Image (cartoon, rainbow, N blue to C red; front, side, top):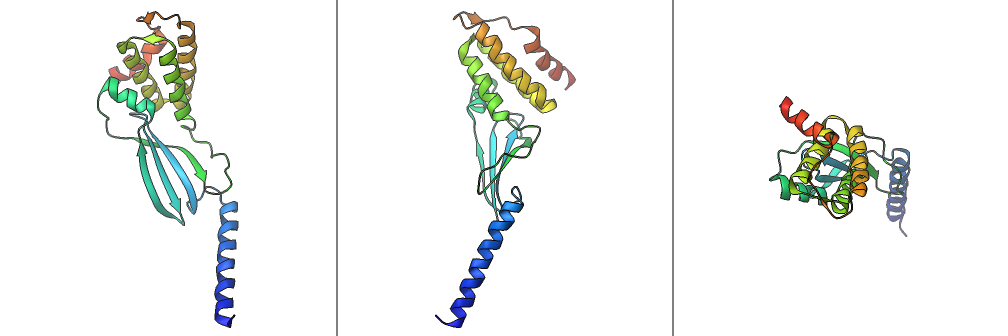
Length: 180
């Protein structure tokens, strides 16, 4: 091998090694990560991939929750994106704690609740709108709401259509719409 080839190989190995060490020391930097965002108006997911500080991809995904919301409540509004999680590229590790971390799991919990009990269309709409109103103002309360929703659904899984929701389901929707 010539001297030039050796220097090029040494430079390449050094660069790859430095990149790997940097990625391990700064796991959620935009050198190599994927950041997921939630649209608090609709429940959609946006996934943005970064590599070497450059945005490689930006994808908007209609979650099952967002699809159901669109079918029941109508078209999507202007998005309002909030960070849900940041995942590093190599060696998977937990995301830093964001207020909206776990939102997509909460949405799935509500969907399971909507499938467990037979809610009428109006009740489904109230549940979805209440969850999104809470998600916008108080993400922790939205998490509790999703757990309460599935508990309520389990209690009413007899097969009868649920047409009377308790006040805690409806308060957030009527409260948030009266403020607008």
